Length: 114
Length: 114
DNA sequence: TTCTATAGTTCAATAATACGGAACTAAGCG
DNA sequence: CGCTTAGTTCCGTATTATTGAACTATAGAA
Image: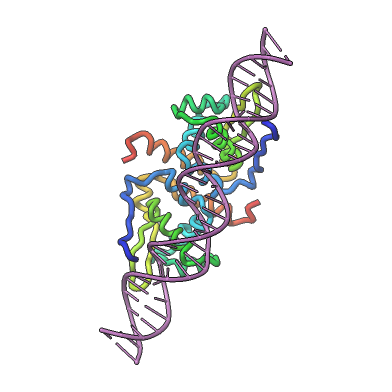
């Protein structure tokens, strides 16, 4: 990246911000996948794992939104960027919130949605 | 209203839709207030109780978004419209989700947010 | 170091949403 | 019907989102 990545302080994270970041099905899917990937995951892997034909720029924007909402931290690892969910910090700030959202997301996606 | 109000079937309600509807601080506040008002609440009362200088059209739009996301049901009561949260239906579809979101919202608003 | 490939970011133009004033519609009352 | 209250709809403006193209960063090869 040109500029260093900015991550908000956990105390500056807001509920509305989190909900907005997760109000996009793609971003919900990304966070869900990230939680299952302790080693972190980059854009390319994301596109592959979610089976989405998504342009690089779009993926980059989704990650930026997740980052600025305080949901993930990203760091460079050689050529690519690795992101992971700020799970423990978020759990302290808003106990149970993320888990509850993802639980509902899984219920919704585990069956034909209707 | 001109057209009859449309409410989605509970099975058509999505997590992303709910999160989007609640990603606006005003709508989060509305839902929070509605849950404390079993008799329902209309736009004017909402503006008063939330102490927001909000135009009628804006309030109407917020209610429409909450309605279309499946969060509330609205019905006419004489001159005004009364809305209430579809609490039990939502609880069945996405157990704990709404409660968890509002719990976090309350935590955030109970102190200076940082 | 220079070249090349890989991974993301930024820019800019277009598309989709949101905000809010003004005009319109519905319901109740006299 | 005329008046008042409560919301909705229309529509111009403003903000935000999408994405192809160009640019930057890093690692490895020559």
